[in-house]
Length: 244
Image 1 (spheres, rainbow, N blue to C red):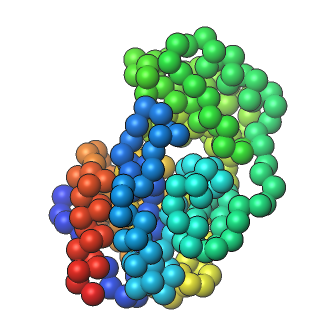
Image 2 (tube, rainbow, N blue to C red; image 1 turned 45 degrees about the horizontal axis):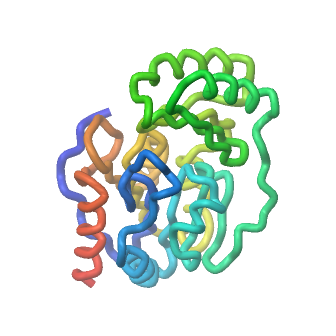
């Protein structure tokens, strides 16, 4: 991985835009339930979606039902790292698969032994948040790796003060690849903007398909370009509209 530095080019009307939510369209907070779009961002997203013929999607690790409470339902939404999807205007009524009971029980035991750590069940994806206990990261990683060694279909994904136990199909890169094979995304140039390690798979796929990618914040990345924060993402999207 390299350190992308340059400012991304503006989108043209043939782009297919994929946007992470937390840390990209909104600030990271200790309480994920308190995170919503900044005022006016919903209108910006809707205008860009119209400009792109509907080829704009929010691609998030959040559960799809939760994500749909925070972004316009007139947009494409891919939640649970791509395991669940909702087309514009469609409700999130599909049956939600769950993680194995034994795995949930093991993670509850771990979480309950640490102050300031909490478990979020996102269907089959289990997220252990430790933003309120940042010194617990290494210990939690060791404990979760030990548990997941007994669940062959699961792997551990680290993020910003979160550790996620994910089944093999929960992958933003796989989601972006599949989306690009269907309308309204097919035939367009994929662009992925995200801030976390879970977005790296989607960066790689967007790049491989002839598109490009944007890392939000610091750190090495497979992305081609960089923006400093969610504020810079908002300014960039406004600039895209101003150039139309």
